[in-house]
Length: 202
Image (cartoon, rainbow, N blue to C red; front, top):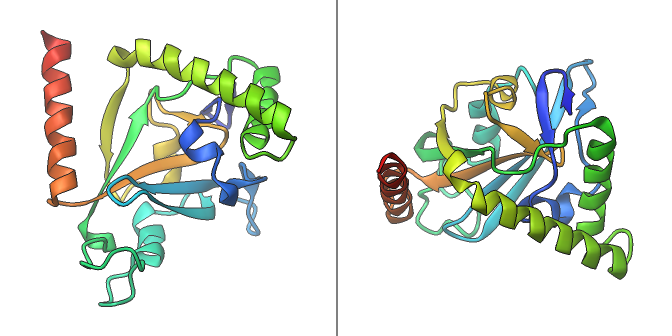
């Protein structure tokens, strides 16, 4: 299924289960532009930021400047070293990271599943949704050779990222992985990407 040229898919467990994305999805912003929720994952610290609306024409750098400001001491409380500033982060997105919804009916089911994963529909629905999501994650793991991480330039717009070939927006939520550029976690991540790329070519 697609919406305005954006490939839509089932939610990932990492984003859909976060309470802050409850009820969020693509919507018209006040000015009439299409806007999408954005989840910023910080794997080094196990932290998450949720931006409820990012308009398609907005540069990602502008959103990052609000979430990860440059001013000393103005950053997130978990970043004691002050490494996570908008000018000093590397952004990554996983292509083909979630299963694509083939039809509008599947997309509706995907939205319902996202609600169930957050516990909004009761414990039985949450358990069933978790099992379904885990099953899809296993299938995606078997297809991991088709998946690949790409670094996202902060100067691109949300719309450009949303429509990047191979990018499937799980549950209607845009997800970016954020690492402090040049830090230990970033170096390990880049090394793992290179190792994975070598294995795929082998």
